[in-house]
Image (tube, rainbow, N blue to C red; front, side):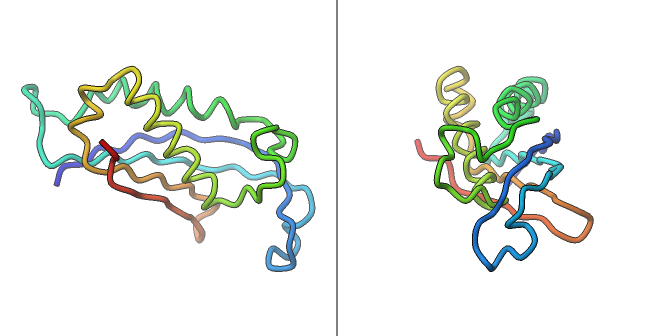
Amino acid sequence: MYSITVRNNILIAHSLPGDVFGPAQNMHGATYIVDAEFFSENVNQYNIIMDLGVVTNILAEVLKFYSYKNLDEVDEFKNIITSTEFLAKDIYDRICARLKKDFNEDYQTLHKLKITLTESNVAWASFEKEIDK
């Protein structure tokens, strides 16, 4: 299996209701390093999975939705706990939608996508799933 990974970051604010979150129940900021890893069983005629520039731009465009926002105030996230795991899945969904819409030929060759949000040097969360064709 081949893979390529691109990286970017987001700065967000949110609160996480529920005793399980301890002090994170309060409003706080988070800076995430976001890795998007694209998997394919094959490479194309150029011996690549996809153009790194394309996936770098897609990741950057998707992350603009979150960056420098208080996620508690984003209409789409009302009454949703915006945990790191939730955000990884949401980013996955948005990247897949963009690929399917604007880069469908490349999208069809992908096997899996993995999104990892790193919160610190000791904690991160990921979402990965095979691509729905």
